[in-house]
Amino acid sequence: MANTIRSLQRLKQTGKPIVALTAWEYSTAQVLDRSGVDLLLVGDSLAMVALGYSTTLPVSVEELLFACQAVRRGVTQALLVADLPFGSYEQSPEQAFATASRFIKEAGAQAVKLEGGYPRMVKTVNFLVESGIPVLGHVGLTPQSVHQFGGFRVQGKTTAEAERILYEAQALELAGAFAIVLEHIPSALAADISRSLSIPTIGIGAGPNCDGQILVTHDLLGLSESPPPFAKPYLDLRSAIAQAVEQFSADVREGK
Image 1 (tube, rainbow, N blue to C red):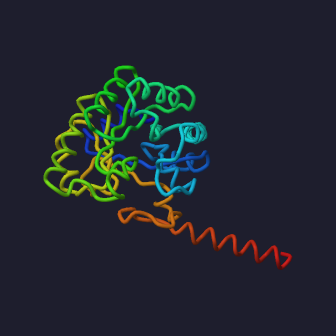
Image 2 (image 1 turned 135 degrees about the vertical axis):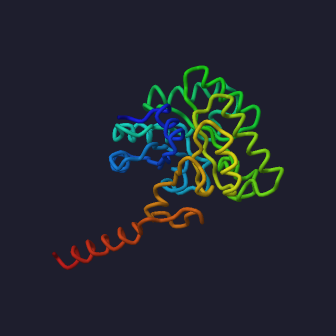
Image 3 (image 1 turned 180 degrees about the horizontal axis):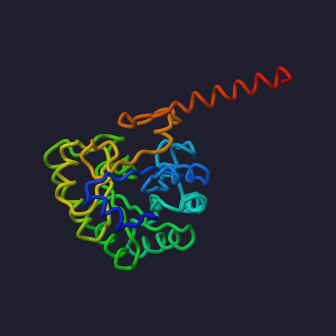
């Protein structure tokens, strides 16, 4: 049975962890989907791991739409969520709806993800949900605010920061978000947030006490040259590819 936002929420209620990964093209998405991943995110991390940028900020709506369309063709079971890129939703709820509706209509996404839980973003999330677009929230380290944070730093280390992030998560739940990503925050804070919410939390660099976990697939496979410290590689695919290419090159040059 294909995953929906309701089935993911039932996983929290029954204590079964949610498995989430990122995808940007058809073949990988198909493998991930058939391997039992619950949620696939067409993330703006595409900018860094596939397009070579140093932050997520430069990726465009058109680039993510193209990626989401390809992923959609490979997915039959996972819930498909699309990131809204920087500059495409922050101006107003109306701007956010215009962008989000393109991902739903043109690319087959079933939900969108927005970063931030400050009051204006909470209003936007509520507007989208009331307009029929499911929203995955995102608090803690929000990479689109990297310049404001002064780098990809752990968030919520002070009491004031922790209280703010907890408040933002609770506000997003009240606004109608179906789940919330908690990124790069202390494990104890992630546990507090997860206990305080009735909707699932999905951690990335937030410890084991979330209702699920997400990683950038390139990091999981060992394809990223400089993965974040919290991303555990399960394979050294970078070296495996290099070895295969070197063997192919040698065979060609030796006439084999």
